[in-house]
Length: 327
Length: 287
Image (tube, rainbow over all chains, first blue to last red; front, side, top):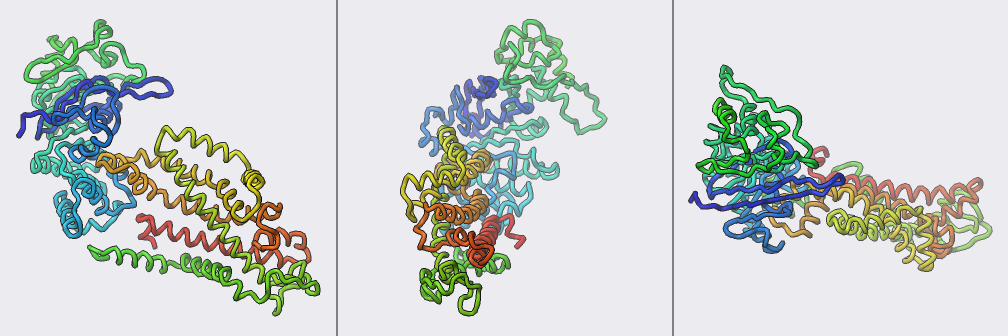
């Protein structure tokens, strides 16, 4: 089942026109998601990861690039054709409060998904809703209640049930646990993992928490200011981060062992304004290894073996490599 | 509530919940009495609303003339209940007109970005005119009649509702649950009705009750200027306008139609508030 590429994003670009100029929120992002796997999309706020996720579902229209899903470029589809594909691609939102219509009962929320793609009537419909609720760990009598009667974690479960109702192949999970209490995060993550395994789901998991991604994802894509800095199998990247940005991110993740010693790489300053990104490598202004050449060349994503790609002109430098090994 | 209820049960509990609330009940009661008096005026009124009686000019309220008489000796009670027919009709029709056009315009402007600028500009331009001046201009252009008054006031109050609906639509359109609906492939018209409009019920109801009151008063203004319905037909507005000259000698001429306006607006707002709370699942628990 795994192995075959279900979703291939190539050269995805999204620009927003603002009063002060053009913002390239996503700039030539490419990655593949193999069937039955979870790919983590990480980066700090403003890195374009959420926009990239929205673009792959065409909830935001990209300006350029290809989104090949199961052999079809979604961008070539008309609005109407796209609607037929919607049942195969779903999304789980970050905010469990604003992602559920406060005026609709839970059975209406989940039922709407059913009515559009998997229409069933009467008791079969009720049974299906009860089954979905049960599947996400909620009591079937939740169906007659309204969203405000539930806690954040429960609401997130309702959102997951809505996404599952149409039996999708692919789900974008947009920071699905970052708005939840820490105690609830693990429960929802476990649920997502169980569902992924049971239904053979393919997922794009957007997060800024690298420890969550390590636990859940098969592959990782690291974004910074709209571009991919590094991508590859999770194990590879966590064991041996090649890009200085990934190294900095990993060094900031807390370790479970308080006695463990690790040198923190503290990034100086804020992420630069996307209105006026640095020339060459966008990360160079905060990179401790930056050299003059970094301002000249936009580093291409280079293959460093075993499907691991890095966009850094100094990725082969012993200094940078040794830093990766200490983490 | 039962775990699985049929729509009929939900309907019944909605009505029963509406009725159990005190303010709603009182509001509903007043509204029904006012409306019934107006509708049944020909059978209830002790005198014809246009019967002149020079001998009984400006008589204070008494057993014979409950609300007194006006400057032509016409019975104020009869005129007040007759006037309710037209005043309530104007109020309701203007609200209906403004609701249909204002909500549609606001929803379309807020939802479709391309149409927003032209519609929003027109709304702003219309709101730049003082209400009554715009209404006068429209009635003057269309010629005075009951329908003209309703249409003119409807046009005047449409932008008010449209602006509120547009502003709220702009907010709701960006919420994740609308995005979720789009991700599910819900058709646009259904997103607009089920996800956007449903969440706009409260501001629309509140604004609607205001427009109802304003429309009745504006109709009075137009009638006073001779641009409304013909002066022989009583409306609460014309009665107050006529009574103004005699407010020192015969305050009952303005008092009773004034009370009628207050009661109908107040009751409408009480019922409107109740509906708003009942339609909002988050507030339902507090009832």
